[in-house]
Amino acid sequence: MKRALLPLSVLLLAAGCASSQNWGWYVIDPTTESGWTNVKFLISGMGATIQISLIAAALSIVIGLIVALPSLSEKRAWRLVNRVYVEFIRSIPLLPMLFWVFYGMPIIFRSMGLNIPIDPFWGAIITLAISDSAFTAEIYRAGIQSIARGQSEAAQTIGLNYFQTMRYVILPQAIRRILPPLANQFIYIVKMSAFASVIGMQELTRRANELVVTEYRPLEIYTLLIFEYLLLVLIISAGVRWLERRMGSDERGQ
Amino acid sequence: MPDAVIELVDVNKWYGTFHALKDINLEVGSGEKVVICGPSGSGKSTVVRCINQLERHQEGTIRIDGVELTDDPKSVAAIRSEVGMVFQQFNLFPHLTVLENLTLGPIKARGLSRKDAEERARHYLERVHIPDQADKRPIQLSGGQQQQVAIARSLCMEPRVLLFDEPTSALDPEMISEVLDVMVDLAEDGMTMVVVTHEMGFARKVADNMIFMDEGETVERGKPEDLFTNPRSDRCRKFLSQILQH
Image (cartoon, rainbow over all chains, first blue to last red):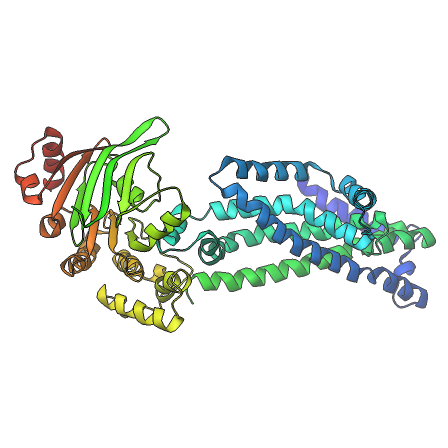
């Protein structure tokens, strides 16, 4: 039964494409002038999506590490700080958090006498970075804990302090285990950056929405949108595999 | 003994409700070699781990070179610079070359220049009989060679005391003698050593004093020959007969 599903769906899709009255690919046909204008309009959101994702991921990697370190402490109070942050942040759905940051935070800033405007660009970045940092913190924790305790003991006995132990002994080893799940989180950020469209950020999804309103061709335009994200994610995957290969060969001592 | 490098007075330690160390007293003078033996779970590893503060003791006093160990991170750091440690599982850093394993501590903790640290590292690699392995990764070495590197790594910090926690227990039989040879060399050069081991041949050869531990207590102590030939307690006699049988 399950085996029949795939050929069946392919058949249905083919049938759908063949009946021209249901599809209107002209709207994004790059060989026509208006189609090309539309495609350029859609793709022009790529820069914003990439910028938001990269900056948010970079921030999340830093915040995540800062949040993860207290979870490894022997002191209960420090571990509690980590637990509260992780449990609280990861329970907030992205969209409400985006609204809270974009509409709510400026009010807090004003009440403190600060005039810090939050534009859609930074609103999206802050939200994505904080939301994702709870997950990257857990990834760091698991990665660091997977390094045998003898490693940090040996580092201590040759006089390294806590930060030197992390920097020169633990993290270089943990990073190989942390990298694959961290790449997963980066892909997650790229996809979740679509939410920035609802606060007016001119990224991929926003562009698609705006074009749908004027052209009224949701099927074709959103299909292209999906392939735009697919392209981004495939590029990230290839980059991560390249990185992993480089690090892997390093560990085998070549 | 006023010139004791290591001094333990009535040291007690608990893991939860488990009484791991019971009133341990120990003095190790400069250049002295002490071997600690005993069945597994007797607390012998815990003693050496308390001496360099990988574990905290709850009662009693530990002094290294006359300086008492407290919770103060500075006192712990001071101890660590005097006391080297060799682990059962070697605990080499797998992502670094042998040379980098040896120079990491001297460069980062002691502030040596790379050139000086490498010079020192090569000197000690020669001392542990493996001068040609500097650029390999730990994983490319045999178990015995890895432990020799670990010993050299401790020596690079030029400690006053070397602690050994069952240094040959994780090794294949044919590797054990290489490591023991290095340890005998160090002993003959006057290094102060506390060695947890079941290698009774080594104990007989180098130990000034031997301690037999069981259930967290020091049951018996004395010269190795006395312990071997004339153990006073049943527990010690039984343990020795078990490990000397084969």
